[in-house]
Length: 66
Image 1 (cartoon, one colour):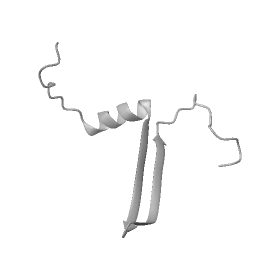
Image 2: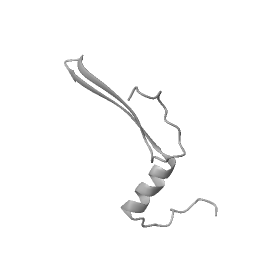
Image 3: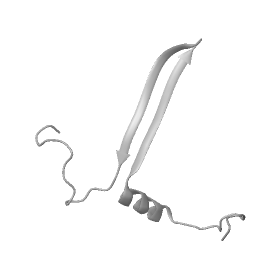
């Protein structure tokens, strides 16, 4: 395959897509700025990790802080 042509179309059910994404984890990152007349009024930074939960994975924070 030389990569010159378009990729073949594949149809994947939404449930299968979510299962694949959550199995490996998804990182969402974004910035949102509300400005009027070149004055920043609101700035929101988003950094989120979405992943499935398994009993074999250790808790990332110390016990009693959640």
